Length: 476
Ligand code: BG6
Image (tube, rainbow, N blue to C red):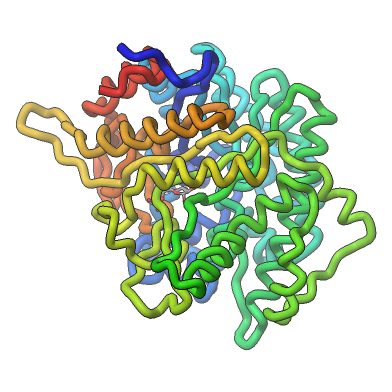
């Protein structure tokens, strides 16, 4: 076996999010969140984009997050499966509305805190480090209906209170934290990303960037508080990553790709460098955006993150005329189709070298350790007549991407760890489907919510176990 390029202590594991796994939507004192209002079916996209207001649940629609994969009741068995694979890290999120059901209370919900203490203690029992996202696409609905969510500055204080509660309640159990999952998705999917819905005629760009300012302040404050509560805490930002390639070497296409990258990297530029980048002045002027700030905001933003985490599923492609060619939208970020790479069943481009390119760009830009906290292949799985799931396509995707990450490490980049997405099958964020599966563990549930919820190890389960045991040296 070749020597491993992965450093000793490299964290290997998998990731999920409360809203896509826990279910138990009405248990434990939990309040409704944005994602609980997003139905499966034809209205899904309009609701996610904030174009169709959905403030009450309807009887004639199915909401996949309400039961999800019932991780809330089954987490002990699920964590045991992760431990069996040899995980040393497990990424999940805390549902804000389990801790503060409405979001604006002064005291937290003890039942919510107890649930997460038990969950994190269960991880520690197997020497698995929890990596915890404070907000993964789930804003308490009360904050949306009463305050307009992140368009309102009050959200900064609500989030800071929630963050302090978590850092204090889970001190000693959790030391790796992420503030907002895929913070740049706010621009592309405003309701699911940040609880934003729009009124007719308003300047949506203004609303989105004002909300972004509030999230960036909240993230910086949370980082500061985490360090105050325990200097050993390490906090990261989280980008829906993947570089834009210019579709041709025409200078206009190269410029378009640069601008598209900046649109996403803007958030990380602030979180990792501590100030608005120079290019925003012109960008805001041209889009008619004027951010309302308060004295002291610049100081708050100086609390930068300890590491930069990101998801990577696909690279992206841009040209001066984005409507010129066929487009695709991996992670809801609009991109042109790249004729040089293959795509998944859902049209997401498969580009392992793009991961190495993205990692090199990010390290050149930020000079902070990287953490790849989501990566994986959404695919349909079939159970064969022997009752097994031979997901070789998934193994091959993961092998090539882990290999590319190894190359990035060999390029000199410090990388803290790798958590593949959806280590156990869960509800898809974009489509609400269960049939878009990412897991090493299969869950018996279909797109309409039928099934026993029984778990089953796939072929990739045994493969990943070997990868972890060899610290990434054995990818065969
Ligand atoms: C990321 C999200 O966008 O990609 C996850 O952080 C999401 O929540 C994942 O599930 C994969 O996307 P999808 O749409 O296939 O579930």
